Image (tube, rainbow, N blue to C red; front, side, top):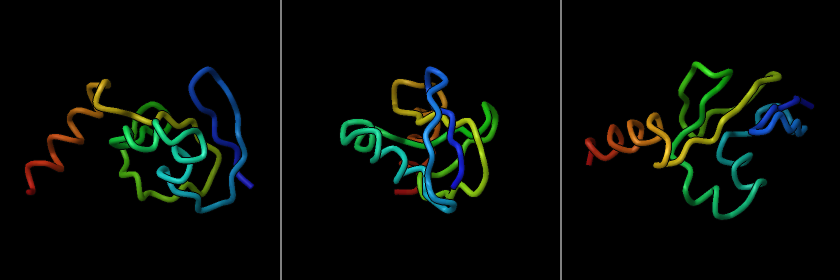
Length: 79
């Protein structure tokens, strides 16, 4: 099991290899639908399909976050 520190310093445990999308889904359907990307340890932007294999601090970013907007715009530019 790995420890994932979320917003508000809430720590949840997940199986090693759980994706950012799976974590967002476990926190609520609304967050899962709104999620654009993740931010690991306050510095690394990652795709929702990124597996988490060690203890991290994770922010689930939506379009309301500047980095979430950038990820959305980058993805949309490929369409």
